[in-house]
Image (cartoon, rainbow, N blue to C red):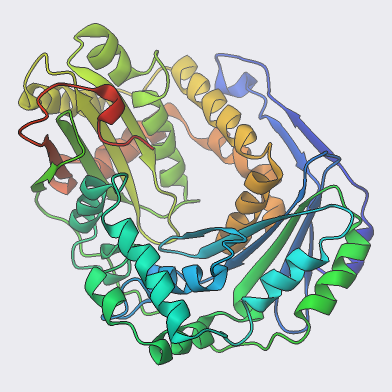
Length: 441
């Protein structure tokens, strides 16, 4: 879209549609975000979303590089570069995933120039010393041993993505590869991917869009395009038999089960159906597994299911923390039965309508803060090529029928495609403590 589109009128409104029981009568929640897009001559994609809020302006930079871009021997380089770009100042919140790196700054609405300058510096040659590399490496080494590290979740991903290198290894990386990283190699990794034509800049808040675009051009105009290596992801091998493992976690005080299934990428119709299935099973006290296992038989302290929304093959993950009332085998059997029942019997229309409202409420909640909205817009621009599609994001779920949900569950959450990790607490931690149970998302 040409920069002249920034003259479009502003609009911002959120509204939840009425609670109804029939899909044909359901009105989708109204999402009307002001979204303007422009592309600089060097390829930087710019997304501006103006809202009359009192908070600081969020300035988010997303680079299309994550752990999926790492070669063998480079596991952790994307995360390492992110830490180096943030430096000792830690001036931005940052996240490295398998699919991308996002850095977010908050700036005064009167003049975000300093924030823009800092973000632009990430896309220019990496000015770092061996000391900077060592400092970032030490910070990451602390993450490897952190109490909040999700060891069981990492092992589950390894099982689900077995034989598929782009997603098989964690974004945190390999401790061995991070320790062996040299400054020249890290610089080469940065030089290959961190350019304006491989990035998206998002501004959200109360600001003048025309003035912001002028400042953006001034800050980013001398950033030079890069030629990223072609991403050869290959194909995720089809899983023919169940996979299992056991993880002993010194920080867990309750036994737990983690299940994972490979599913289609985010944004596809079958993925939408499986998102609804996740909500049906565990979202809220009225969900199926919480009703049966937590409130009913009380064999689980909690149960949660979700999708990871990855750009490549995704994961449907389900976690349940044991209450200690019955065995892990009983918990496994109850969860398996619930999934098989959903695969065979389409859910009632009003049950699906309830889950749609839950999905809508959470989506709108994620958009309330400037920082959350900037991150979401950057993700949609990266995955679907147009951040303005945020306004139609919830419409997709209206196209999902009860039968679609059952078909997707039967096809993708089949027993032979399941990976399972059992979490065993340390022997001296026999007491069940829900606060210290394996993390829920």
